[in-house]
View 1 (tube, rainbow, N blue to C red):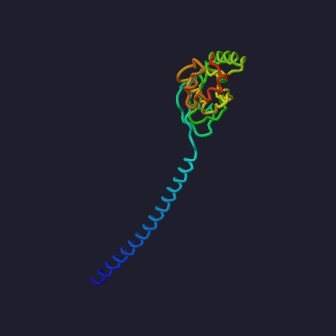
View 2: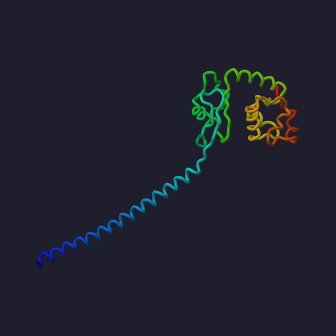
Length: 195
């Protein structure tokens, strides 16, 4: 009987000792897990912060492309990448109508002309070039920016306006553009045409 009691106490002591070790092991494992989780979270937070530093831009690709639309691109993307996202050029497209190597900017509109449109535009530009005036209906952003008081944002506004509303019917219509009032108009009226 004494042997059975003694054996029972030994087993009980072993179980208690084992539970204590298991508990301390569990505590260590749990602490290690918490450390690794906090490391993982801080790593992810760091990645998120770095990702937040990278900007994205939205570009509207239209004209002679397979799928016109607005596309999200990583910062520093090029126009050719936006065109690829739009499914590429149609067979009727004039690849030279846009600078495909240009860096895309947020809110930019990229209109790819057909070969026929490009040919017509070239003829109109030749006509306006003969008298030295800038044609509001055909000039690209670079030519528009040569006008006094017209910067990049106003040039893009002029292009957006004619895309949405159609061709300018008179040079006075340019005053409908935000930021172009009588003061700017008086500076540029002798240098612009709509013919």
